[in-house]
Length: 495
Image (tube, rainbow, N blue to C red; front, side, top):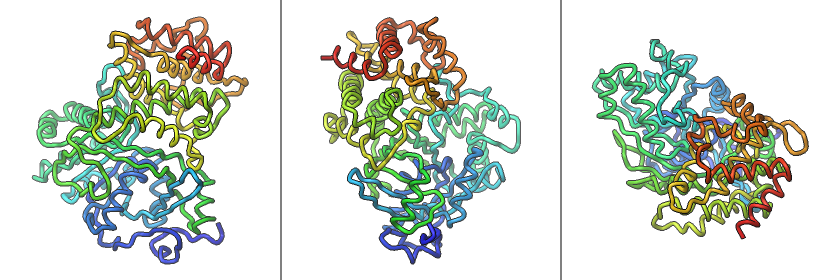
């Protein structure tokens, strides 16, 4: 990295072979505050605003990032050290890399250091959108009841304290100040991988508000808009190898670049409280109803990632592209998509679902992305209930339900959660409910359904014989013959 230039506003002019902001960043004002500035946000929303700034269409729509979690301090420090610039690298299947420097983030506040500064910035009339990528579990929703959990420690603190710690406390307090000062409220825009993410956000924030101040909650109910959205782009965790490659090939020393696939899609409900950027000028699909798009993405792409990752790990793969290139895994994913997910979807004008499904396998197989199996396996207790189980429930409501492959995905999660792979090596399970799911998984074979008895995750699924019959068959096979032979068995039955 000795020949690489440290990324900063002053070093932009020395970069070659890289697209850089051609607009005057000093003239950009923040109109958006974003909670959860990670790779996903920076490969999506921040890139779109950068596109608009390049067109001269968003000078008052710059982004001020906000961090709430302890890990967010690192992102704040990394971005602040390079004038809030970062590099976005697209990795193509043929090995080609394209890089551009994004300049749409103009500030970053770390809430634990100064919650008052965060609240006051959101209360400023210039902020018209507060957006979120706080992960699927960040909305504090009970998986079975669908209710916001008021007894979560951070939430309980914020209900009884003047200096809030959570995104809920910070946002609601900012809305209080805007109401009291006669300032129109901002739009709260979720960009997380959740079905009806706007409605989920509305439920979370208004439930918190009702517990805090009923009059304020009534004002929020009547005045604040929570649009639904769907964003699709595979964005793996940045590695040291990515940093080194960026330095070697483009001469950029970037503390935290972002890597992603070329594919990009953002579908956004056209529902805003107080204006919005002209997103459509940067390729965003502005629609009245996001739900059909959400179903396709969550039930095909996201659920298939879960179908790939546990089987893939048990079969010895550590990267998604290697697993997706295995014919057995590819056939299994297509069988799940064709037989079980597709019948639960609504048609979308202009989208050929029969072309979309094999394209997903091609995207998963992109060797340039090097998305890790570990990333896809992480936080399964948040992902499986939201992405896969809605397919199961819709299928079980049909006259002739088909749940074999979805049950196999759940069984492969249970086998993975035992924490020991087929070679006897330990598996590092990463999950907010790690101890609970591992304890349940390891009660097999004494209790074949121990894993399914967690009502918070699975509801009454353990009482559905159409599902448990397939789950039992797969979990038994995973223990007796291993993941590869289990997939062969499943696919042979389909034929």
